[in-house]
Length: 236
Image 1 (cartoon, rainbow, N blue to C red):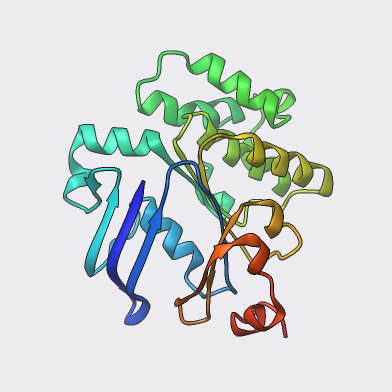
Image 2 (cartoon, helix red, strand yellow):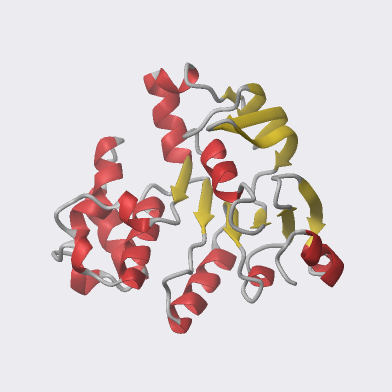
């Protein structure tokens, strides 16, 4: 589904990734672990076509992702329908006058013909039905996080990219979210540094060290060894 070959990415003079290689298969549920500043968010943005490498190759299916290819209307629409990202900073995603309009925005832009059904379905799933006419900015952090999830899921994406998706959720909402992730039959990559919920988010774990280097890529049962987590800076 995704193929990253020899990618080097620099931002503001700093090297985030150097000669990065990574393959992601359809249907995988992947946990991306690392401390703040390790490159987790940047990797998700790279996969979402929001930042671009200085060298190397990145493919989604048979699409070579670049500024040039994503300027092509048909390619861009297909990719945006297929891959959705929920940002860590939820406020950066919200700009519509009501929760209904927020969830409906992307389906409207991409030409879906069942917008109302999509909005109401995902509002119900995330417990947002009572707030459909509310102003998003006036809701709680947890409610905003649910809105962001509903916005992305309203497109029925093939790939869901999640950046610290439970940071503002209460325990009950976190449990419901984990249940939803396990039930979805799509590719899901979740970036987190929360070791409590990480084992429940995926069977494959990718761990980045503080310099953006992959120090582990494998099965969940071998990912949480103390020495490995110390190398990543996730525990002291």
